[in-house]
Image (cartoon, rainbow, N blue to C red; front, side, top):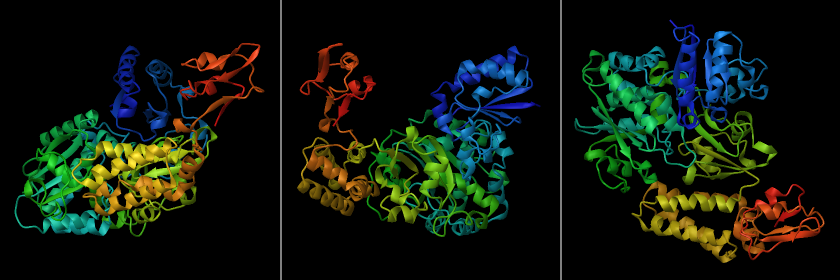
Length: 598
């Protein structure tokens, strides 16, 4: 029995910041200090507060260390674990806490104060590669309850009553989808977990799979029992190696304990599960394209109907839910639909996980009750924009979503409100933008991504998005006209009305939302030939104010193309605009405000 547990984050973000070396160093120094039989080091999934990683938490001392480096480990071991003295220099700062008590109590850390963790309940708390730790957290209890005391229809009725809607973006009620499949004739049916998370800046599903893979497996087993399936697939992109590894470990462990396979819990229910790797195509997040990929075909969407619940993988009835949806299932069955549907809003029940990124102080994973406002997420959880920059917009829903402004900050977050505001929930990416972002360039960035990821099957998406990108590029270069702006807006609506799949139909959203809220920036690019945010290089000019120039030559030394000339100590420096590549190095080098960007 260990007296102390040291939890080290081993999610992708912290792994990229040497958390593996931190783990190894703990084991090394614990052995040196003779503590290896008293203190256990545990690799966990993401704690959520990614901006503070790598994170090390010490239980039962309730100590939370942030930005830990491998070289810090010996000090933690010698001072804290050996001598009992907390290393204060590595703890969270007072500004991160509700009180000045340096403790791990989640309610005392501002980042978690307004969160309610259901899908993320075990992330950062258990070893995802040890099934016994998941079982200790009531793991597989819901599956046992379902198989021993509920009929498939009772399970579906409970899911319907819970109000759980698909967290992959569409927001379709999970219980209704399961009912459609159950009602289809035939004994051969399939269930699929969609873990093909492709939105820029989104890492919710990856983190759940890395931190709590059994929650998803248990959810899939319950879904399979309810709809009458005996085989399931987890479709996950190969770029998620840690998640893939932990999923496979979890599947193997569940099979070894008889929690996956034949006659689970001694019942007549048998279910097998396999992993299918995707090659990273964004379009394979669309369910019919995903099905084609599982079947070994090129991942391209097909017209609906028929819907997958009627004719899915191998032409058989199939239910597809994403990772976050499935991570909620066991908790709903364990605690009851009435418990779950008391959380959230009237039409959007439960919680939603967001990947909070961009120009925000506290980047990371956030799980909040539906109905929480954007303002609460961005300012009270996220801490606002760094460096005292002014908030400008937030992009929700990834490339399929849209930008919302300060006027929408008090909008309660749910499926319907976000669509009404001109964006969408999507899978849960939330990118914050500040005063230094050009909204025309933001639209161009997302359109560039969409063009690259279009499967090319339908003309509106294949050709239409390419034309939109060309138009946006012209505007960022100062070559746009007001007529072009109208043509671009018309083309957006034509693509929305005629593209084959949901991804194509929502592809113009970033353009339409930025036009709706930031048309003045488009006009500035077109009429004034200026980028108000100073981002679009073709519209930038750099000049040196001779009255402020200290003749120090710092700007000239920084210039990579020798576009700045002058005589140090005697003559003010000037920029040759014909040679200038607009890198901004001169402005960074000048500490006297003499370099002006126009």
